[in-house]
Image 1 (tube, rainbow, N blue to C red):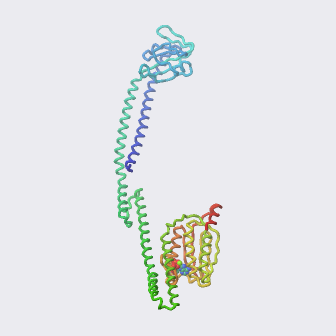
Image 2 (image 1 turned 90 degrees about the vertical axis):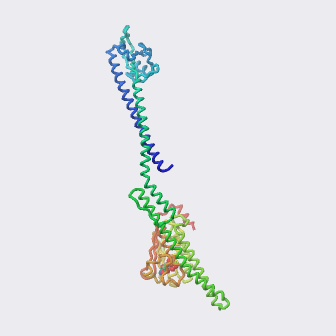
Image 3 (image 1 turned 135 degrees about the vertical axis):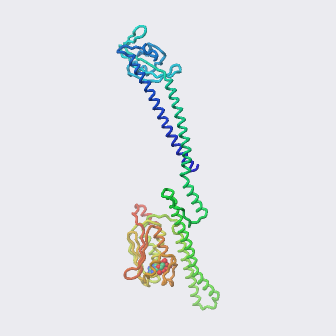
Amino acid sequence: MTFRTRVVVAATVAVVLVVLAVATAAYVASRNALLSSVDGSLAATANLALNGNRVLAGGVADLRPQVVLPSGTALIQNGLPVDSTVLAVAQGRESQAFANVAVAGQQYREIVVRLLPGSIVESQLTPYPLPNGGALQLATPITGLDNELGHLELELILFGLGGVALALVLGLIISRAALAPLNELISSVEEVADTTDVTKRLDPGSQDELGTLRRTFNRLLAALEQSRESQRQLVLDAGHELRTPLTSLRTNLEVIRRLDELSPEDRQVLVDDVLTQLEELTTLVADLSELARGDQAPTEAAPFRLDRVVEDAVALATTHGRARGVQLDVACQPSWVMGRRDRVARAVGNLLDNAIKWSPDQGVVEVGCIGGELAVRDHGPGIDPMDLPHIFNRFYRAPGARGRPGSGLGLAIVAQVAEEEGGSVWGGNADGGGALFRLRFPQVRPPAEGDDEDEATED
Ligand SMILES: Nc1ncnc2c1ncn2[C@@H]1O[C@H](COP(=O)(O)OP(=O)(O)O)[C@@H](O)[C@H]1O
Ligand SMILES: [Mg+2]
């Protein structure tokens, strides 16, 4: 069922319900009004027939009078049924009642009035006393009323059907007009989908819901375009960065062809060179895939203890630092943060690696964490203010870093993790020299005791 059909059907169903309700109300109201006017004249006639304790049953003969004794016996009889309503009045349990009755296929409206004990019925023959009282039944045919109601019914049905038909036609016309902008939007979006041209933008449209949809779609396109562009840039940059180590590897391998011409010392240097280059290539490729993985990391964000992650990263980094006598001085307080633990661990590791790399031999790297924030400070040369705006860019390496191993992706990964995990990162120079990096993640309340144990045994 199309959207348009649904709208039209819904509108028509609503109209049908309203028409039904109105028609029923009109029918019931008219019927009640007609009946109450009949009841009024029945009551007036009954009043005329009762004169003190005398009952002039004969004077209302055209109205089918009938007098019923409390026993249920009809004294003056004319075929009106003596039912429980009549008995209730005759026996004094009710003083008056109205009812619809059928006699010989004809519809009557009847009134039943209580006759008090001691009343005397004046018939054509002899007056008849009612020591125990009784009931006077008067009835008038309501065939006319039924006919009138029948007409009304027909009229209401015809008007109702007309209304529903009109609603259907109007619904079709209005829905076509109302859905035209939607159809237009659908064809614009289809066009974008067919061409997969994310540089296209939809006409922003008006300030209504469809306009909002158009603008939201444009925002989506812009985000898509940007992500496509950055993907393209990453591949281009990666290609460019891979070229240099590949070229020097190739040069070295060409030298290896003439291995027997080299002295044992030169051979050693050459092989070491090749191994270092391979290691750098491996790091580069690993960093690249980490960067490309980004948001797609398979783990879920969860609360974890930042200080534990830092401890683990420090343990790993200490072994790297040992070769050059670099020490890590750690001061951490327990703090819970929210995020993907493996990604955060990676970012922390990158900061520690840089600090150790830039530390002088026998230097000290200070690592502190408190309240969801990690600070890493070294006593190396610090960062040139000229480089500061670029250090978080992909593949950016300060001119002074060219001689050292690295891909230029370490801080880019840190920045990416900070952004994606809802945190922030800051890099600069510390008072008294050396670089200082601050990495912050959203702090959360420690989960219940049980979770704490899970967390503690996780690694
Ligand atoms: N602790 C530090 N001290 C001095 N400079 C740093 C430090 N950390 C990062 N940098 C500068 O930021 C640049 C980018 O760092 P990074 O992205 O980790 O790449 P890489 O470590 O591969 O050079 C480095 O080349 C260096 O110039
Ligand atoms: Mg680095």
